[in-house]
Amino acid sequence: MKYETILVEKAGNLARVTLNRPQILNAINARLLLELKDMFARLRIDQKTRFVIFTGAGRAFSCGAEFTKKAMDERYSTPEMTSERLAQLFGHDFMSAMESLEQVTIAALNGAAVGAGLCLAMNCDFRIASEKAVFGVPEANLGIFFTWGATPRLTALIGPAKAKELIMTCDNIDAREAWRIGLVNKVVPADQLMATCEELVQKLASKGPLAIRMTKKMVNAASLAKMADLYSCEPELVERLMLSPEVKEGVEAFIEKRVPRFSEF
Image (tube, rainbow, N blue to C red; front, side):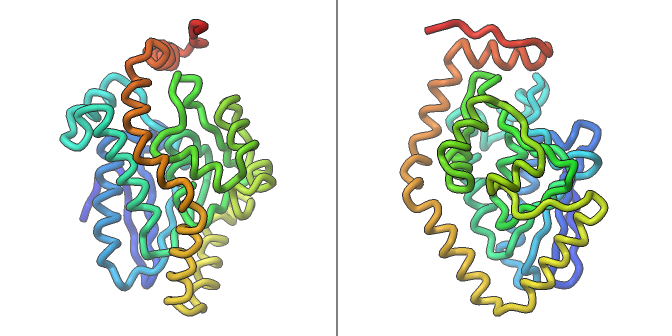
């Protein structure tokens, strides 16, 4: 199937998925999410593809959600996302669908992976970063928290102290720091990124397919089992948060490229 916002290339047991909005740093809008979710459904019944590499066109993996009036209007006019609660439920379903793919997934992080872009990367089984990659969670600058179950997922990856630091400060970190705290598996020169991902695919392809598939499922279950109860509460929390004037101020400040002026309690 031909998509508008992603490119899907298959060769043998490998699929390469490229986020393809390079002119706006692969910002994530409703169409991109729906196209990815459709692709996940197709991969679910694809018994030939065993590995998927996700990357971004141009100089970024993804700069995160597209916060423009047009993007927000399109999002809330999409049947699956007509309210904030439905948008959050869609987000949780999306994350679960990506995380539970039968294929081994690898994020080839060619540049910035922030906010929702980092969510996509965290959902992959492996993350290999170019030396040019940058990571961050800017949500608190907008008056919101790291939603779609991303906060517990990040905590599972890097521990509570570093998760709080990354989310609360909104500071970006470079690839070497991301490797040091366990956010990525490896850092390589930019011109070696895709070759390194393909080398990992070849190594994993030489192992028992069932053993690899079951290992993925068991590790996912072990790392997320105690956090599952949080996911059902998050849509209501976000729905209430979106009624706060803080979000309005945060988003307006982002669009106007100024520092937000949040009021004290």
